[in-house]
Image 1 (cartoon, chains in turn green, yellow):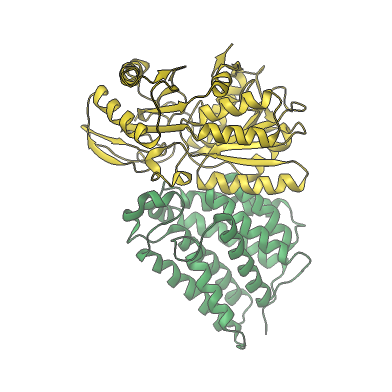
Image 2 (cartoon, rainbow over the protein chains, first blue to last red):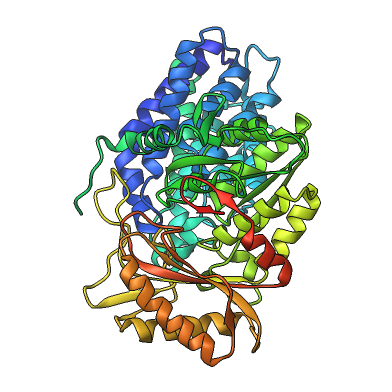
Length: 216
Length: 333
């Protein structure tokens, strides 16, 4: 059976994201303190907790509202670079599925694609510059190559795996963008915390779908 | 480091509440948003509004310069982190007097992304916005690649020029052009000898040995030009002025304003010792100092160190420097 995510599923996914980033906060902060100012985990955790709170306070939010309106709250509590990038991505994803009551794998692919475009545009960044794009883009590229495949479970697992590998590959990259670029040489050998966050997001979504929509 | 605050999460809001309580006749919140501070009489009809913003930890930057003759509003983020897009948008709507809004702020990624999106959304609502980045720190980008440089204490001169120009009745385009041409003559360089700690962080943003200093250190602890053995005030000042005059040519007989700025912990006494040397060097080169500013203008909390900013003047810019200002942190009749 093909994936169908409803409003309640998205709500659960956002709760899982808040839990995940609360748990991974210190790990992400430690990565960031090696190449930046050490607050990436705090920002992500604060941001997704604000998203969760907003969604719980507004039970009538559509899927699109959840992305756009609670994404604004992510930016509100974190500001900074990651705050506006995550909001830009969530807003773009929310706009592309504006009227939809359920979303399928094709929608998810489109949402990932427009999110990446929004991050590229807002951050003026490209793949290979040691950013969140380095986990998201390989994931999307893999998904796009699977055009004629039908096993959605395998496709999702493969996408998450590519995101993980993409995040790991940032260890070999030099920071070229953002505050981390002032730590250029020191950044080699350290995984980009933004790229790892990109993987964490896709991992939460992927795991939820496989476990709760029992498509495996 | 010993500090006085209550809970780290409340650091910024409690600081802002203190400022609002101290200057209720000068400042107010924009639409109830404590992270968006405006002049008490905003919006001012038929004047271009000047808006700035950035992370906390740099007082008087940013809201210390909100007031007559300078800024119309400032958006305030967490310590060393950009404010949100929505705080900037709320601020923009609150200060627009119908003649457009100039976003004037330092060249930092998070600030740019948030201000850019706020500008797009403000324009959708019919507010004209232009953005101008301050890039005065010569340590953060090669000559020829000035646009990559960070904005530091030169923000103060940018605010002076834009604020005065806007109050003269200039259009948004004119305020933008005039401020941009003033900034072409503004250069800064800093030196740090001890770091600061972001509230809630477990350790300082960088570490420097007891006998070390770093010329060009950024105001968030970004790496500078070179870490070296500490030198006397005269030696460091000489070196910094040499680097500055290498970056911008100032001829005999030309006039500059000089800003000697404490990064936070360095006392006024030391700033005047530095200024003494600057005035000697410039006097020997027959460069006239028109109006020196000496004190805390753009800080990094308790960081020890100072920065020197030179502003190459024309008659027009001298007039703008003389334009009266009245804000919580600076008052010039």
